[in-house]
Every structure is written in C-alpha cells, then in structure tokens.
Length: 316
Image (cartoon, rainbow, N blue to C red; front, side, top):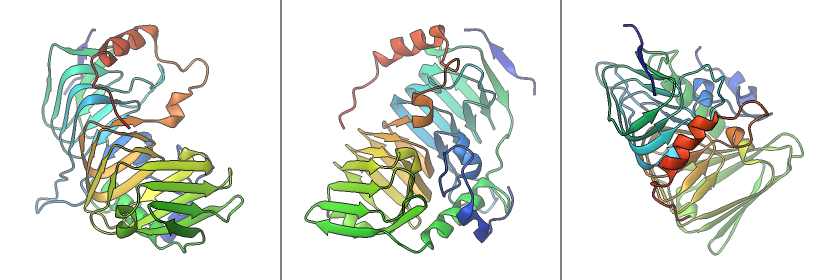
C-alpha cells in the first residue's frame, strides 16, 4: 500500500551481557531495536496464533521520543516525538495493530499494521501514514524473545553493590569505578520504602534487578548521585504487572513481561514493557539536550506549545 501523505535479531547468547546499547553511552545493557524508541511495548507473550498482544494507551501527556507497540496504540490529548531531530530518519510512531489518534500532536512518520484513525483535532507536520510491519516482534529472532532473554541475562549477573534499608529509605551504594554496579532488590523492599538513593561512580553503569511478579512504585522519591540516569537500568525481570504513580523514574525501565500502569508521574529514559497505559510523561534525556542543528523546527515547537497548554499538569 502506498503511503498516505498529509499536509499540515539474532538469538540471544550470554555475550549480550557485555554488549553495548546503540543509544546509550558506555552502558552494559542492550535493548536491541527497542533502544530506538522512548516507549516500547512488546507483547511479553503471544497467543495461540503467534500474534503479539502488547498495547499502548495514553491520555493527556507526551512522549518526547519515538513510540512503538506490538499491538494497538491509542493516544488522546497527547504528543509524540516533539524532540526528535528534524532530520530523524526513523518512524515516530509504530503500531503492530491499529493506530487511533485524537486531539494531540505528532512529529514524524507513522506506521500501522491493520487500521488507523485520526481526528481533525490531531495536529501533524510533514507526516505520512503507511501500512507495514517495520519491527519484528515475534518469533525466535523477534523483539519479544530478545528482550525477555536480555532481562533474564541481566538478572543472572552477580550483585556487587551494597543494598541497605533504613526505615523507608533504600540506599544502593556502587563499588565500581568504571564498570557495572549490580544490585538485587525485592518487591517487598520496594513496597516498604518511599525513598530510593542510588550512589555510583560517574563512569559506572547501574543495573537494579527487582524480583517479584507485581512491584509497585507509588509516591516515591528516586535520586541518582554520580552516574547519569542514562546509565541506570531498572530490570523488573519477573514482573507481570507493574504499577507506578506520583514518581519520577530516572533511568531505563525494562519489564518485558509486565503490563505497566503509570499515572501522575514521569520517566526519564526508555520504557520497555509488555503493555502500557496511563497519563505519565515519558522523557528522553538523550533528546532533551540535542546537538546544535538537531532542534525541532519552530513550527513544530509552536504546535507543541499550543498543545501543552491543554495538557494536564503532573504532580510528582
């Protein structure tokens, strides 16, 4: 099918443990194709026909980078890709199933698997809607398998950092000067605390392996000292549900089996889950401070500014 123009991997091996993300700087974790997307919903599992079921549903917020889902994407009063560079060659929005947009803004091209619907209130720039399947989600070489195996591999890394808890405060103290600090935290520990302090060397990567099938992060204060949030990975390797509210999550969230419900908060990094719903804002630190010449055009910024005036305020 011709694009509609509008005017307005390989099997996982243990070598993965030492590989580098195509997007992050000197980190010891690799998201594969998901690294190209600020928000990525893989199915976590497949039904009896082998079709991925991961959906994204968001209202009254925005994602600064690109968005992709194995299943359906439904966005209302929302913006996508506002900080993508003007010369971005990828797709800003990819839905393996249906794509439904109403009252919002998109900066870039969109691809849908089955059908798409766009309301007159959805503002677009030099946008094309194309039917296709640019991402392989299922099968041995698909994103599902890659991310699930990656999450398992990271969970098997030996913890070398120190985890302490005093009352409602969990402190993770790194020991590496330039390598990887690995921490193990349980679902019960998270539930009994409201403060998470992460201390690591500026050159260190941090992997936080969280055990448990249904972790929650509600009314949380997370602070990173030393290293960058782009070097921090929260690996919810057992979670089938993940719930967060009133929290700013600095770093990458990897929960390839989890349905993630996230409201009244924001994530500063990649969010890779089985499905996503909520009004949380998803920021991309790599895009927040773009290189000269890569800023979004003034017209796009003006459209986004108009949209953001209507966006529901976040309380974090």
